[in-house]
Length: 309
Ligand SMILES: [Zn+2]
Ligand SMILES: [Zn+2]
Image (cartoon, rainbow, N blue to C red; front, side):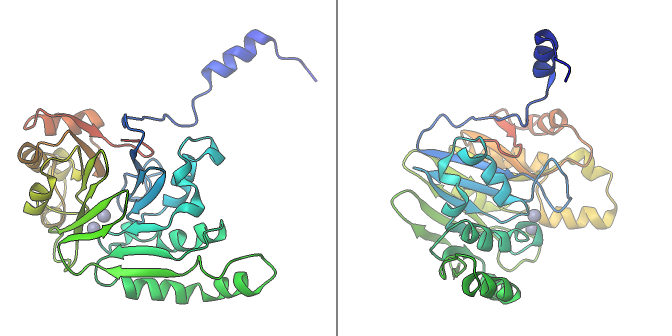
């Protein structure tokens, strides 16, 4: 075998691109918010489906179940070279869902089953809109042969971790509390969805407000008051201008433009605005920021998958 000279080896090493560029903005040892997926229904390889993980004192809380969430969260665990032990797959036990759109739920079977296969021995606790119960029961029914085979076949598997305790959110306000976090739900306007929620998470050292999918919604401003981080969905105004009238009408009723977000951010005044569920429609990050900053001078970050806040 030919030897590679040390100089050539060094050049190869230096020029090799990093596996991924990790950005950690958190500055907290207690609370870390991880963007597992900043995407939307478009299957962009760079943006996994919409999902977040809040990790408080190494206990994880998942928010939305876009496709890819389990693998993306594994990426940050020591097992795969990351540093957040709390995201170990078997520790994913508590989850919150904003609404039932498929780009937020096609990862749900993965969240139910994979952590169990990896050793979770307690039922998953899920808090979501009306209809999450029916969706859960149908998923379990669809996978009943897999569950039966794992529980009663030769494979060592526990008979608890595949189960789901689902809770339908019936009212605005506090829906969950433990020693790490208080979670409040608030209704947002997302077309004619009867149940679309945003969430406010209060941890020992951070307040994080998540918009879910919505057009500009007064409750985001109400619950966003005093937030350290406002995670908000957004679409490019320039891109919007290129859409057909039908699509314009749809997006106007369902989502929030950069210009509208500037107004919301101005009224909310959070420590920082983090963009997710981003519809670039051909715009660059700089153009997106420019549109927002034309009406808002605070800190705005274009979220990327695996960013930590
Ligand atoms: Zn969506
Ligand atoms: Zn939606």
